[in-house]
Length: 85
Image (cartoon, rainbow, N blue to C red; front, side, top):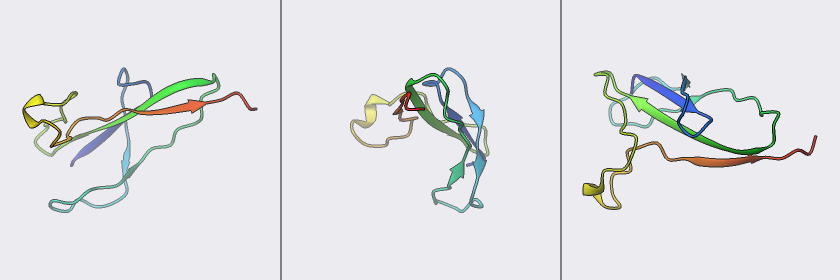
């Protein structure tokens, strides 16, 4: 993995994240990105996507040929920000 990006709005906008670990063959690679809790309360959808050293980006949706296998696309994670002050 050469690049990882994060979206906090369900995939409309993307920004770079920072790798924590060096690249290793066939290994997961941890990353981090600061996210300031937004002021307006509500539902936010977080996603991440990777790009390899050949410039190939993860597909944006599941390839139905794989059935329930090969989950290789950005999975949305819903978070809820409340107005507790």
